[in-house]
Length: 61
Ligand SMILES: [Zn+2]
Image (cartoon, rainbow, N blue to C red; front, top):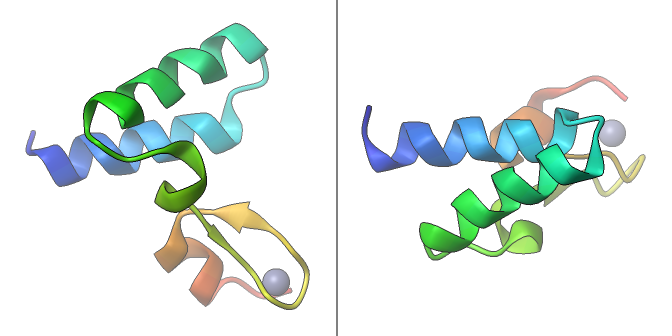
C-alpha cells in the first residue's frame, strides 16, 4: 500500500466516519502524510459537498 492509497483511505475515512473520535484518527493520518484535512479534500462548487477531489469532481449534484 503506497502513500497515495493511504491518503485516499484516510480522506475517505474523514468524510465517512460517524464518530468524531474516529474522524480525528483519520485526520491524524493525513497530518502524518503532510496533508491537512481541508487541503486533502475537495468541495463541489455547486452543492458544497465535501469529499475526495476526484470523487467530488465526478459526482452528480
Ligand atoms: Zn455537487
